[in-house]
Image (cartoon, rainbow, N blue to C red; front, side, top):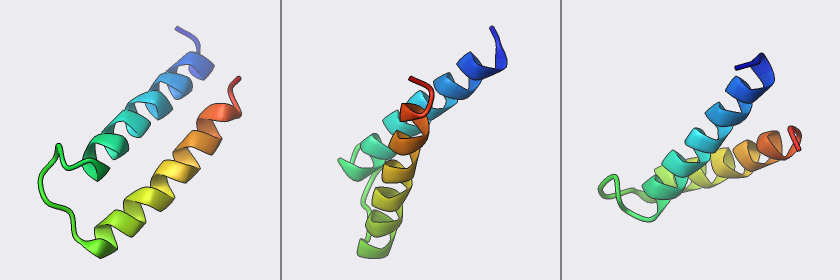
Length: 52
């Protein structure tokens, strides 16, 4: 697997984790953590889009 595919797979996994965190699958989330996760999710989606 080349470096780009590793990076792409990393961001796919990161997005899945953050979405899971935001929908409560990882337990309760407070407002500050929710805001941080939403920002991180936005950044991760932008990073993944750069691979397409």
